[in-house]
Image (cartoon, rainbow, N blue to C red; front, side):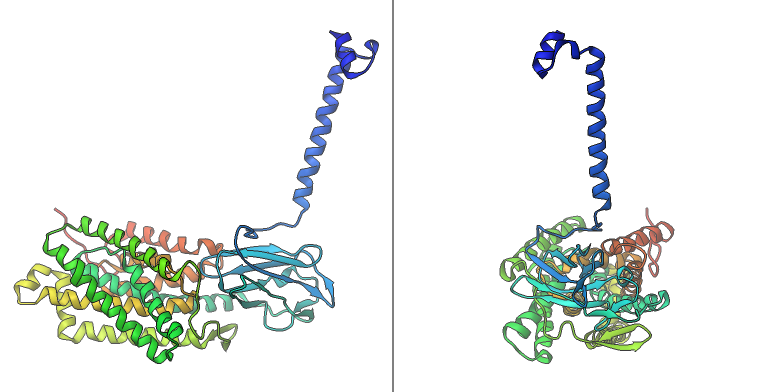
Amino acid sequence: MTDMFARFIGGTVTSVTPSRIGSHRRSLLKTMMIVLLGLMGAFAAAPAIADTTGEEYDFRIAGNVKNEGEPIADVRIEVANDSYSAEIVTDAEGKWAIGVPEGGIYSVTLDESTLPEGIAVLEGGATQSVEIGPSGSVVKNFFIGEGERQVVTLFDQIVQRLIYGINFGLMLGLASIGLSLVYGTTGLSNFSHAELVTFGALMALAFGVVLALPLWIAFPLALVASAGLGWAQDAGLWRPLRQRGLGLVQLMIVSIGLSLAVRYVFQFFVGGGTTQLPGSGGDKIPLFGAVALSVVDLSSMAISLVVIVLFALWLMYSKTGKATRAISDNSALAAASGIDVDRVVRIVWILASVLAGLAGILWAYFRPGIKWDMGEKILLLMFAAVVLGGLGTAFGALLGALIVGILVETSALVIPSDLKYVGALVLLIAILLVRPQGILGRKERIG
């Protein structure tokens, strides 16, 4: 056996012994371990990429980080919008590139703490916006040089996030109020409410971009179209199903199927890309400290507040509003007292569709961009707001939406932006464990 092994490795019989073979094996294992540890060290020493460069995506944002023509390596760059975020560090030549799933407007942030001492972003700030057009790619370079860094304090960041959260919460409240009213008057958990949000944005796109009408004409027309859709849904689908005596579970399943069907109809007509409404991505107006809002942000908050106040006055003091609250409290008793329940429910569907359509237009600017499934992105947050505030109560839905909006935006200070929606759902579970009826809901007797 020893002779055969020696001839196989090309050695001599006298130079190969069992102990020598064992020694060779140990040497080979040591060599493999050294190579493996070397590879692991090389990977550990390589610049870290916190998320992904998204090389599987067709859209791309790239740039260079240089100071007076000299590249700067290991500078962290983050690209994000409402539904996607990724980050990377520059290579030895100062270059970076991040793939993104769709076109549209993204914020690009250069982490100034990763720049060399005494080097800062001189113009535009460390966070700037870019828009990916039809070409599918865009280059973003920061103007950097010797200078002092503008450090945003934690307090300023919290205040800024609070304002963004209120803006988001008001927009979310518009959609949640309609969802809560439909539940209160019919008992239906309408999963197709998200498509009413998308429909409003798509109608604004059709009138404002495709037909190129002025925005002061396009947006009211979009809301009229949303009202028509709400009327058609109740007249053509929900009222006949109610008259047939379908249970709430069957109606909920119908709403899920309707949601999927309408969503893919939207995709068939508008495609899978992202389209912007006129005026998206405007310049920021400094307010106080580090807080800066665009004209669109300020207009969105003002419109939301005015509409919510008008709706509250209608609900509290108008005859139809009082009838709506009576049906929400006890539908059978309301009908026995002479209230036309079907008529009030029809009005509720129309109002819910109008509020959802307006929320869709504002969501298209906040997001920013219009996409075929944009309403579905906030559907769970709408349900969280409704359940958190109290099922069937319009004011509870508004309160719940404000809490969810503020929590979503402020939580991004301590957790990754990809997980910011999770915090709202965790809060929902925690509150329901303590107060199952919601904040403004009433306890119901069971059994």
